[in-house]
Length: 382
Ligand SMILES: Cc1cc2nc3c(=O)[nH]c(=O)nc-3n(C[C@H](O)[C@H](O)[C@H](O)COP(=O)(O)OP(=O)(O)OC[C@H]3O[C@@H](n4cnc5c(N)ncnc54)[C@H](O)[C@@H]3O)c2cc1C
Picture 1: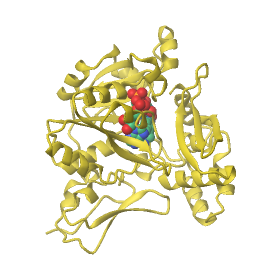
Picture 2: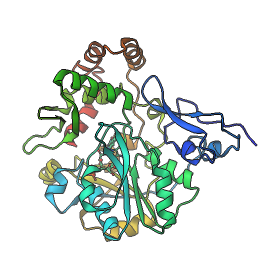
Picture 3: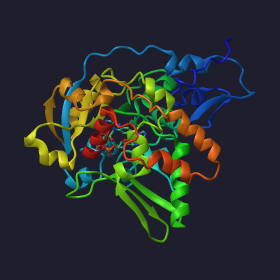
Picture 4: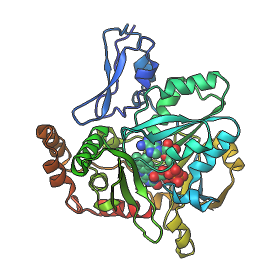
């Protein structure tokens, strides 16, 4: 018997494998003062040590052979328009659904919370499309994946690399019928801060926020837009770089502490396939880039079989090209120098948030560094 030793706060990704895997349900994911969820071990813990055993942050990852690199896009322009990049995710999900499988991914619920849900048909797929920069709540998802696999269903699980790794560690194996896609990821925003931003918008508009598009592609405009829709009409609609959320993301003020030392910010990928955004492919691809091009890495034999079956436009590219346009394949995002001041001020502010949000999130480019400018450019391309 061993006492539960879990990853220290600075390294815990919040994947929740420990909570989902606890045989006594003794671990609960609880929001900390920054609004990120961490495991808290309760009295029913019998010290079996399973949580320590499966925690991905406490294990060395295997080194995989180098992935094959492609620039791809969905053949339907309307789907591309509603996707974060070139719609590769939708092509994969459609293939799995057509075969009677089930797809797990991140959606925004009616309370504006980003959470993982299960999708069983094409109509529901739209909820998963597009990036949501907020850390998604996994809830019961890992267990639901295990149930679906036990029922002999094909499962596609998509998420950040830490979530995909958490799922494998929870399952303790790589089941044949499980397909995974991890995202190239430059960090996740605090769900607690997102709640506060939603509260502030609700207060200003005097209406409940009911839906959001984090990076809407508008025809003729290079920059993506952050759009929030309110009950009974009314919209907040701004270029992402001018929104408080976009500024907080670009300046790396709002990210989970573990994102700043992310062990997945490299080319040794965890999923069968990795999805990201491809850009800087040259003048011949300018029009396609405007519509969105997905970066797709094939990381496993299973990923290669899946990729072969997809109907996508595809171009073979190199890992050097992929890395040159995506910092998140090379290094973790560094933290904004004023990160801890911001969270301390937010805590002190209590319910009077607006002044703090304005002070830290209304400046055009708080860091003013090359890295921040580079990231801003990336948002514009997506
Ligand atoms: C937090 C975050 C950071 C990212 N950072 C980068 C980056 O630095 N560089 C880059 O090239 N690409 C990044 N991406 C990925 C990118 O935005 C596109 O989602 C990806 O390129 C796939 O695009 P697509 O058109 O194929 O499909 P899309 O339809 O855009 O992909 C949607 C997929 O993303 C998943 N997803 C969306 N939000 C979340 C979330 N919060 N948590 C877990 N899964 C989620 C959905 O479940 C779905 O599977 C990031 C995505 C997220 C969510």
